[in-house]
Image (cartoon, rainbow, N blue to C red):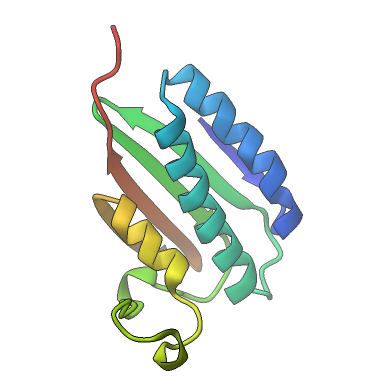
Length: 137
């Protein structure tokens, strides 16, 4: 299931409805719905925030392949921003000593089994893979 959304934070409500439709069709539960929404909201808002020059909609693709959920966001005609190279957050440090930002990516790393980044022809693509239980047959 794939759809493009305007690169504005007010697209998040429409994205949540898109995720709900996917979750219902893929026979997933509340936890998967929560995880998908968190992953997409964080990645989408980062794309909007860190590529303000972007003029194109952002593509969101959701797939279920057996016991794996695939979340793929593509931002078109932008500079690279490889989230896999973002430094980890040291959650053992007191809040006053931590750098600002990065907690969203920290949460994604906790949820995901795999995160990949591809950049080709000025298109930035982030794919997150998350394991789930087998689909009911």
